[in-house]
Length: 242
Length: 179
Image 1: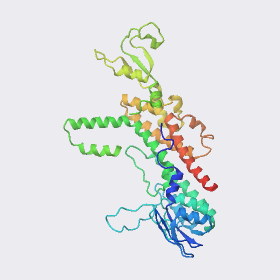
Image 2: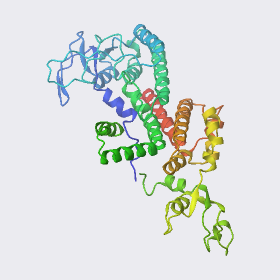
Image 3: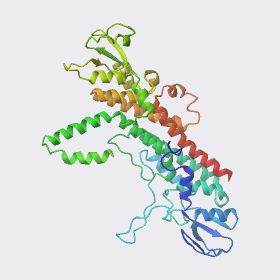
Image 4: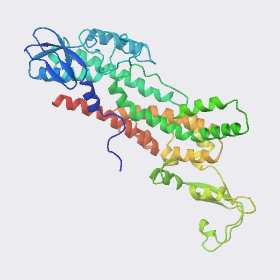
């Protein structure tokens, strides 16, 4: 009857999206430019650094044709600083990287994976959207390109634990009118917590459904009786509930 | 609101609520186990929610309703006070397998602001524990076993959802290593 997949994206799908992120590689062999549907990939000329999509970087790494330069935030020093920030601020997540200035006012803001958040010269003090996926994949495929891979792996685990605990705590403040600030939450974390958070909201709405119904009835009555004072509020509330 | 074929909604409707008959009904004695007799005025019977609701809401010609509904024992003040004291220690499953659904249905019939508050707070407090248990590999077996047995059907689904998504991420990470 229903699709076997839950709503939202599965972890392999999120990882697949992450593979479009640009990472910096140091090629060991020449490779001519590739004309791909996703865009042109510049020719690789050792020893010049080039930014290429993660999937190609992983492929070249496995064939020992390139070394991957880990992004600036993916080292023990930066991760330690971010972890301290996470522990210090109990209610918020560490902020995402700043958006680059937009070329003009009427362009839409760019989002990952079209931001160069994972190249060697990215911001060192912020976790990008695909931090967990990218970190895990790089540590798996290119651990010899890290200075201290075990330390980095441990820090990634710590960060994940701290942030998931915060997401779980969000259940206390989720309510019909409540909100929870999720700025800076990564793609894999959203995917992991989606079913729990929506489940809590659904449950709470089911319990409070009768109160909601009463309120709507009362407001409809007031509307019909000609008290138009709350008419504007009524429309606003309707939007909130959808 | 919910689907006609929703098995949880059907099971919720089948839960018993105490009803008091306001009129003497001839030939309805079988509800009490009295096969051929009449239903006496003032007799208290446990009826399924769907039947009790129908009888309570249907208005006969003389406009007095046939039965009056009372909140079921699962939602009695005693239980609500226990939930206010500590939501985590109450065995909701023993009270009613579909505790929250039953609460929502009862709240459609009675206006009880306080019950909404208590149920919402209970659900929130227990959801936090459920999330912790779902992410803890030994949670459902070790010290959390008693709590897990006391989950109502909604909470079980929540646990399953949280557990499955955590497991999916773990599976993805181990798959990564095998490549």
